[in-house]
Length: 308
Image 1 (tube, rainbow, N blue to C red):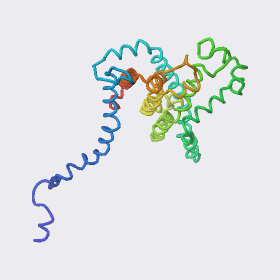
Image 2 (image 1 turned 90 degrees about the vertical axis):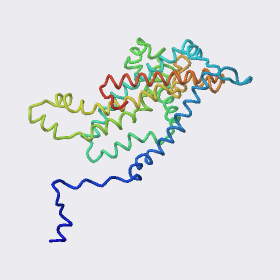
Image 3 (image 1 turned 60 degrees about the vertical axis):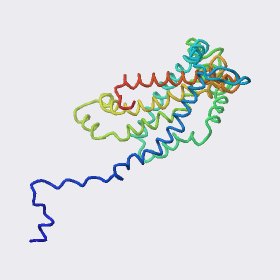
Image 4 (image 1 turned 180 degrees about the horizontal axis):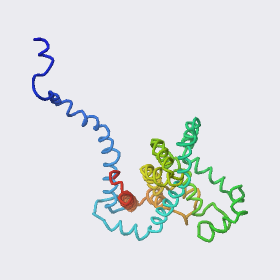
């Protein structure tokens, strides 16, 4: 009886859990320390250095000095606003194309592939096994003037339609906006497929079965259940595709011409050929701020502020 009294509490309520020690309280901060240090070293310090460079004046021969030259931002906007708008236009069109291609693909893998699911997922990420540069150069062959793809587009009259809207010129695809958009779409397609698949695969199949029991058609089930539940994947895929596409310059370099130059091409030229570091830094900061502003606006409009 005496021993039982030590085991069973005699008070009215349950015994409160013991207070965590000081070491356990600090454990989350220690776990976040590596990521925090990486963020400071690889993001914060480079951004501050870039911002500092954008406000300097001088030249490579005479040296640079910090002069608070905010006019560099206005000068790069006046000179490079077409490349700015072209970057966002190409990135937006490529993002829309990736959604149209990736959603049926991710849906098929998640709901219909069965035992072939793993094989299809490997095929989706297979392009990552080769260099980004090699993948882009391969499209110069695919879209060559005498290639099968261009012959098919020419014979079916598709090139006539793309000529009308300004995506191609002179019955060719290379060195046109369409080539750059197709290259961006291909290179960033896995960034759209994988978040969509993750969002679709975890959906509760019982919801679709319940909708069928209530005489819902397949289209109604998709529109009222599958699509809303997959929106987090759509938004994540959109951000993962649009952000790198807007800053890309490889596709415009190899698949386009100077008339399809994007903001990334202008930054590349200012940094590596003209050696005008101040204006290159100002253009880089401007592009980053514009992308962040668009992303914040898009996420808030989509109703998922928790992603910001």
